[in-house]
Length: 190
Image 1 (cartoon, rainbow, N blue to C red):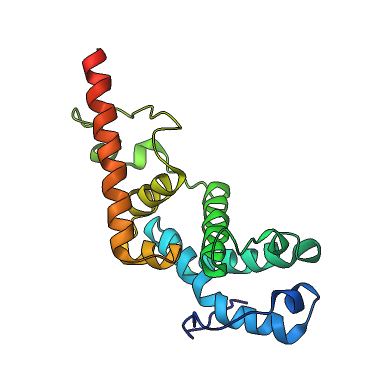
Image 2: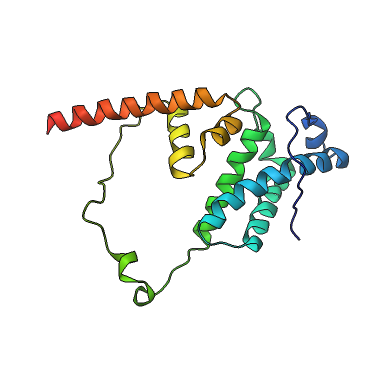
């Protein structure tokens, strides 16, 4: 059975985590009511892009809730409010569960059934860069990943991170400038 609620997340709503972790049923129901749409939207955005259906979205949503309450809320107990808002943390957990689901559901077609255009490698395909781990800050890496790999717009990223859209644009700009400088230096060495 799918958990799908259309009530938007109210950022002013407070979840009593201590009651939730103690197994309080009303606290759990409030938590589900507030965060089910967030989990659903996060899973749906990624899964639908890759041809997965609503049944699989519902499966991921259910899996996220199972992960959160499994083993006496072990995963939920790892949430640290000093590091991120609960909504942001839930989105990260949801994204992780979605990626795990897609990995488990590897869909393959026989190569004979693929069109030539799909399997051909364009001549101008970019070469992957081996970017040093310390080149970008963790926040810069996260912003670039969310924007370019998860295809989120700046407003969505800003909402997920609990910052302004201008902060996201600035972070993206600084990260791209660092990458440009690094690429120029790398090309000069060759």
